[in-house]
Image (cartoon, rainbow, N blue to C red; front, top):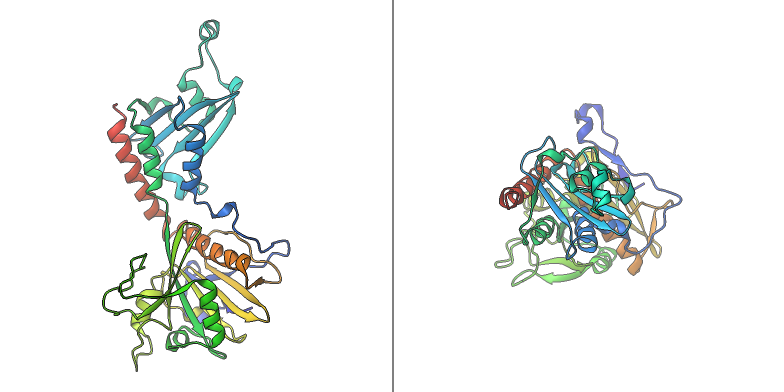
Length: 369
């Protein structure tokens, strides 16, 4: 194990601020990218595009319901009805995202006279059959032809396409955050790991995602490590590349960046345990440690209490190869670690408020149309 999560009683760290060690799964396998990489809002976009967009369907909106602003879309799909229920609860009560529902067509109640006339059931009855939690009486149909595009745009605004991760380096025998920030260069194995993650870029004049780094005057160092992966931009805040201040044990300039990263990756030379209790930032929610072992890397992962489980799972033994599949596994783990952190008590309320603003805006502009 490369991470120590034992908190001394004298530290006075409350349980909700402590880290928990992820256990390896003997049945887990290191594979390439799989379905869990999709963000929930991306799943909603795919569902809406595949089954609703460009097809006859109905959209219903409400500014105020017991569940907050709401947008419901329904469509007949062969012998089924499909619905998508968008609320502000996605980050808390429904962490899987908007409710995507499917029911058989014959499960929807329909008045006898509508049957005789060959008419479909009312949209209200379809919604009642889809879920008892849809406040049908409060919803109004939005008929503006621009509404489907606006619903897609709302979800698109919630897709996160750029990520920043802290990247620390520990020499053999080093175990603390202070040690990590004290290093200004790494061993050849660390440089090999940086090449494994991405490309070393010059910050001055950089035109891509900069993750808060200075790209004009080299005030945050001259170089960083960047990659574009699966359509996402990833920048690493490499502790050894960030400005180093002599006689400053805390290395505040490094902490200003890595201390504000939700996920921190730590590369370790040797098998010394990184002491998680030495981390001082409340923003760090997941720490993933990697060390070389022969032709593979060994991985350990810790997450703050309140961060839900996330894929891909760490295998037992916790090894991954130094090839494209292993790289996909590690980057996938980092990206999903940050997304899982958004569902923790520290971030979920903020994300819910953002979604509330977006839904309310659509409802106010289109519910009377």
